[in-house]
Length: 392
Image 1 (cartoon, rainbow, N blue to C red):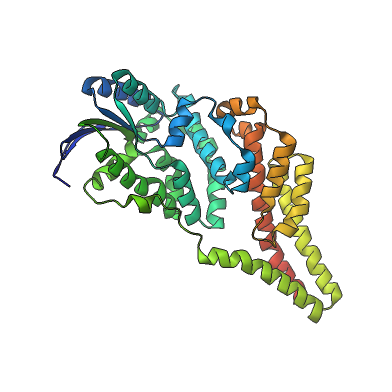
Image 2 (spheres, helix red, strand yellow):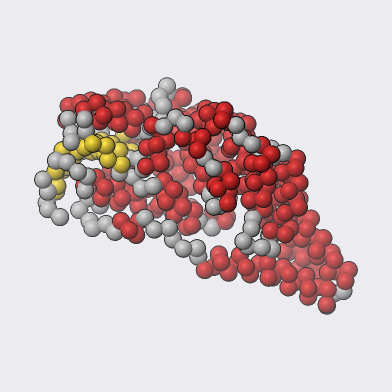
């Protein structure tokens, strides 16, 4: 790559590489000042191309108001993407809450960049990695306990949003919103920072420097600016960044090993400790899985028949790695709840409060899947020592 030249002013960096001139704007995703700056720079620079920190699905999410109406919940559940969709909605919830507090829509600077580009006739270049790949890579790198901690952190952090001041919003210009929300988690879960921040820094750097046109304005979260500049001249393997890591061998071993262990202990109990002990083990297994999975579905405010399906399914699905109790209860809730068009239309508004997550039929279905699976998993880990104790 040819020599790169950089200059810096407040919240903007001017880079030249090969025959291109790039104006890099670092924004806070919920700052009115940042949105105004985007308008101003694009109007003054009159670029050939405007790069935005969006992927195709996120671009559609802010330009197509009826996008949620095309969501196939049965497909989401069957493809094991319920938690990923719920996580995406929870991230949107955090940004929306902050935006409501300061009177600006989350991602307003991206909307303004798109409108300004269209008004000036500039090409719009989507520079971010597909959010589904980012979340899937994060998900694959996290263990079950880490996933549970992450969900708990999101829920418990919601009250802290009320304490955010305008000074905190301006501080976001030094940090990406995702980095701010996950900064504390990132200390104990570095894999989250690696995928959400560092990998995307490299991805954005490559997409921006290879964008078409001689003059380019790039609009990104301020937290990505240092990383983009750091990786600007480095060769970047885009195929590697777009890969979803295979499931770990240990996870595969546990998925099949735990059911085999449970069944083996129960059979051994019948032969060595007697029929009464073996029967007690079966009862413990059924009871712990059924109660905790049913409790998970109940916490998500599932339909009574959904809760019943979780209770019935959990003891069986926990012994079958190919099926999860949450998929069963989620499909039952989808069939019984039958989300209406208004549920999709109200989704952007409902995710602005935690109460809305439970009220909206779509997010409630996702919560049913997640909490049922968490309950069933806890039931398995509670049952094992109880069965061993009975055997002993």
